[in-house]
Length: 567
Ligand code: ATP
Ligand code: MG
Image 1 (cartoon, rainbow, N blue to C red):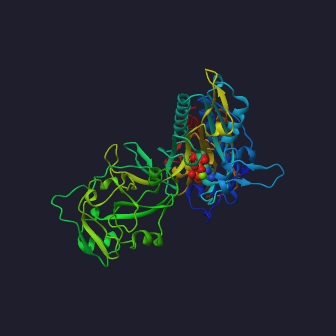
Image 2: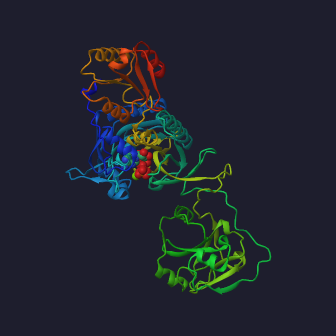
């Protein structure tokens, strides 16, 4: 391919509304252009790479017996009403004005269950794995970060249909393995975390995550031991507060100027881990006190799963005053004005020598023995894991990192098949709902994550598998030198014959300009061909990743490149 005939509108400046490196580089290298917030056009260079990601997805899905569908983006709203997801999706679903009540599909569980309900009737016809690579429409509230979070985006979504739980386990495991292969082939460093299935309904789910400072998820990881978890459920090894010997009697004391744990421990020289913090939450409309170490933060997700509700919020000042008769800063588990339930974090189990508010403004208790002096309904892990705490596998420190979700695998169960009447007859002729799994990968997000992990200050660094072209030939003064033209063209033809894809920079541009563009576009090897070198029978090979440059004779290029690409 001659670069003069290939549309690669590179940008010299960093576009000012793009924050993430991948977003900046995809714009600068001419891979994409934005049309509206979260809506992008793929330009030829970007689309070439995107198709290579899709090839990998197709190969690995086919390898686990997946069958490719293409489902429509326009869906009858009434199918979505059967699972109540029109309501559940809320503003995220794009509603469009039309005679026939069609919506733009944000995902495809419903349509899959619909087809299954029509055509899969017996246990003999399963397992099935159905997949597609297709556009999804989601009116994301904060579309930023480029194609990482689009409002129209490509998803590889697949769905498994099974007759039994054991069958689902197998389909799920096959997907897990395929996902590992896919991300490894793309050259992405990732980790897997267990996640709560949220609004999807179902039992087990896992997310494939990528560490990234712009990620919207928070995870605790230790790459050496292999521990990784969403912070929502992460655990660590922390010594409980425990007991001190010869603890004096419980005693109330005045603390007029101490509202925070820090002030309290500093002004009265108290051990900070024994200063207990009283966190007041409204859970299912009832006030609840959760007592924890003052240095800890409550983990709302853990609270939600312990109380099995998502009706969970911090109490406001008026609610606190009403229940405790005191203001925040002086609250505690003893002498609460109204009768409410008190729970405590596990680290406080059987602790004594604790300090806590006395439910009178400016007063605290010290030397509290939690078992003796408080009525605790239950102890549970309510705290958020902190960076540096010991990993439960190896005991080594955990990192707490931001992360991006690349893919998600769910054991859906029967929610969708029941709602849409997707039933089969089992071996005994008994009717039962199909057991479903649902598995998604954001195709553009994969590509963006590859760039996040593979770039430098000069541009993108493609790996051999995804690069839009294998070799970038830079013809210096190509338009002026017949010799350069001849060597460049012969090399291009020979390499193309070997099955390699070649981009030949034949443009009427200065060498410096070509070098900059080549580094920005990021093809793994550049071959620099100019008159000056040719006079000494030399061309230059430059490897984009390492920056290593070697001079070789034109007759040796083919050998070097076929070795590099193993062709
Ligand atoms: P997120 O939490 O990032 O919104 P999600 O939980 O909504 O993701 P799923 O519904 O599980 O995502 O979709 C499967 C995959 O599709 C995700 O793992 C992600 O890679 C991709 N994806 C989801 N939303 C977007 C989006 N707006 N733009 C690009 N890719 C997306
Ligand atoms: Mg989402």
